[in-house]
Length: 146
Image (tube, rainbow, N blue to C red; front, side, top):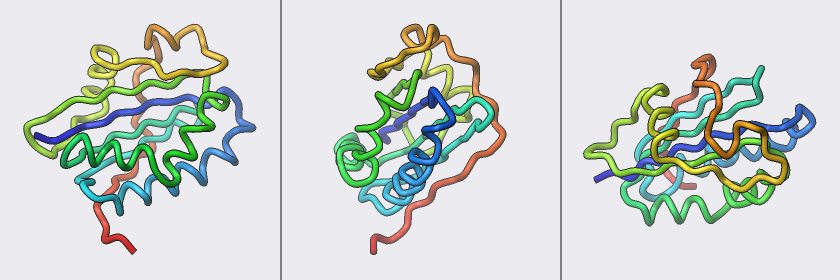
């Protein structure tokens, strides 16, 4: 079984974008070099300040090791202040294939949970966000560490 992780966040103001983007790029690179990373995709909806990440991992332990280290950990420490919406869903899949964004959103609404944010929007707690707009996606692929 493959461990799948989905995150969605919305920055609450444009002023947080210059701090967020470098951490997001470093986190993506960290994922591509992480042990157990199989596949991934990131989606940016810049006009709405919404960012999605969908990743597949060999097992939950590999996913957890990535989540709690490096640039990703640094980013997590800032998101409660920067975001007014943040949510995560995790599930197991029979193979390493990623669902499309509409299926990922369906799973987030059905099985996900909101993450802690200091300034939640009205939509935050109920995961009542708009569906994803697939405008700018970037595939993540495993790379050798180094």
